[in-house]
Length: 260
Image 1 (cartoon, rainbow, N blue to C red):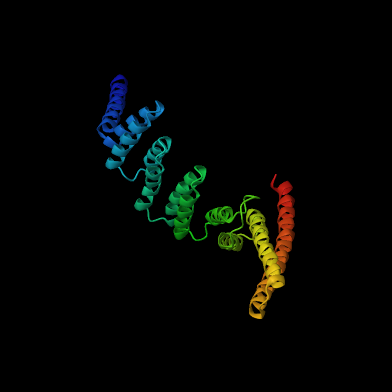
Image 2 (cartoon, one colour):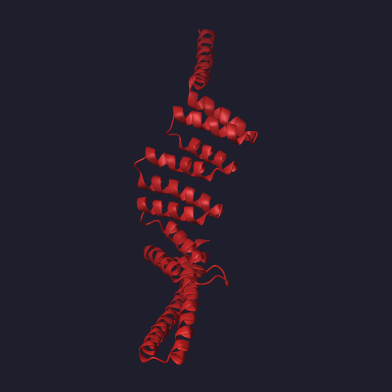
């Protein structure tokens, strides 16, 4: 009986392997995914994207294949198609965190390609699904700060973008009061804004001295006073941020020995 039982078990095992192979061969999603992977190994990205697309027609819920398809499009420089592939899985889930992650992936791709306008849109979409997304808020602050000139010594300050940057950093800090990154970069944005106000004060001071009409001189004096007040407020804020940065750095340093 034992030889017969062993033979039956071997036969069933072999049959299972055959059935599994057949099921994979009959599954168009698996077949086209395998073909896509084969083309990807050969760096045949257009063909890979096509095969991944066919795989997704059979099974559009496979997030991994959407990511593989996005990678193929990125290799081809097709960023719009890659972004569409990365966001597609959001349609097949009710989990807001999963939806947000799809848009964060798109944003990361655009940041890597230095397409900051598109990255900003994607981070904003991520926040719609996850309003407490500290990472997206910090990145939006960075993008606005860069547009405001805070990432270059030679770029002129843009108060509109700098105001947006400061607001994003404030939101990130509200979510995490120990966010050292947000404190440091908020200080950079405010320092750049301070440069703008100093320019404003210098111009207003010159107008006060040059204007001959009383009304124009009064308007210039008001402008000078307002610029001076904002400069004083910014300097106080910078001092507060510097103190806070030192406190957070000290707290993080104190935690390290116990963590190790």
